[in-house]
Image: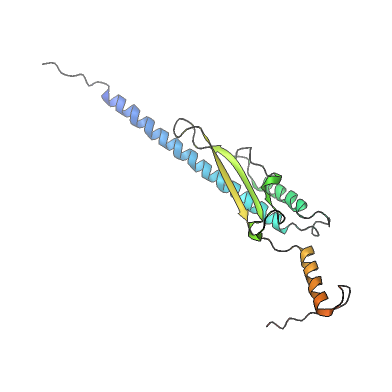
Length: 175
């Protein structure tokens, strides 16, 4: 009776399982890098959105600038807060990434958002397709100083029947 030759079976099993294990390790490593990049971009987006919301025309000394100056400040803050080590270079703030008070009907959606692409995995496990990541930071908007002044002036005109040039003291009794 002839015996079967099983030489090499354990080598083949080792190669197959080792390849699968290493593939999963690289897949999860790339996913971890994607999550890390996403968190870094989201932090930069959040900081840029905060800078955008507090960017006031009067604060920066150009009364006619409005939100365009605030968006320029937001772009600077975004660039400063985005590390260049792990992030892909295609992450930039453009004019389309701004939700200004003029563009949205509800003030909760005022802020900054950004989209960027990254490969889901390294290619040999999980495919080479690009995944679109989106980071949004909508913080709501407080009125600017100029808007506050005009609202206070409107209230003074209603109470005193005069203009804003009149000296008036408004009293709040806390009630």
